[in-house]
Picture 1: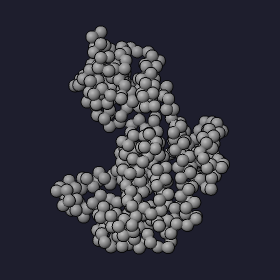
Picture 2: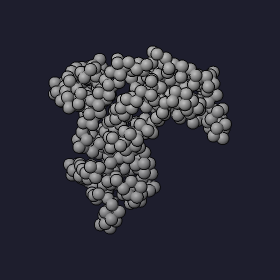
Picture 3: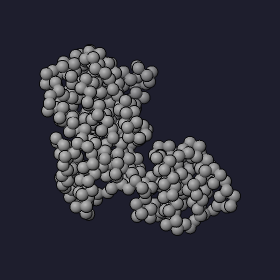
Picture 4: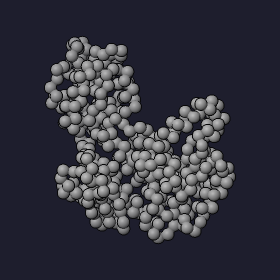
Length: 407
């Protein structure tokens, strides 16, 4: 009744092995998309945000928003809930969220040399081997980012797995045989101790999700549960340790099943970085669009002093790309720029991303420009030079509108 976790490089016969193990053991298969769907429904986080946390590059806004940490904490909680099923084959990135301390989980990695994978990929997809290699490198890079984020090591590091099978050396049927033989071993039978480890993982994940929902960064905290007792290690220097400890204790204590909470500095507490808690009431994903580089970079710095997270681009094309890839909440947009002008950018933004609020900030506008921009859906129309407090207030109002629409 063990759980089989499968993680694989692309073009490593993973689908065939997964289905073979599932059929032989009689276990259902769950994938990352099943996990993402479950977590999105239970947490309210968008499925796209959860996918980006798993597969994508870190957002430029993440240092202000902690979006990835919140998403990963929720995914971890989802995996902890799935482990209540003791007959299961899980295939995908989510398998790396499960702690190695759970004795009835068999962690398996399927991998092969890139050259052989390229030959197979070219055959399957009708690509050249060169193009297949490009895809392999792209997929391997995503896997590396994910494993580095979670464990700080290479994606195929043998310490992460109970079995690492070289699919260029072993056939699919033999791989299925090896996995099923190990999964059926008495060593992997669930015990009272291993089931308690799952319950501890679930409780620790619930506490971590509670903390990240309040703006705390899970990268700066380590949460461990043991029979209802919670230990939280703080791994970044904080100015008021006592106050932070009290807040963490109070938040963790609200989670059902927690009997006690102990907070203490962790091994990395005395490093140079300072602990930072995200404030979800403040705008943290603001995109500034202006071709006046000195002005817009100075504006970004002044906003950061007010704890408003921002990023800067210098033309309309880049603004549209960033809007699609990074999904900012608020965009501050100049009108007169080379290439695509601000009015056209505004029009496209409100068509493709109607949930984003756009504030026009220009030094070359007219009454007619103002009328057109507001008709196109701009949240506000401001003129340079602008008072930073006024701009901050308008940003806050735009962000409050977004938050209220999200419920």
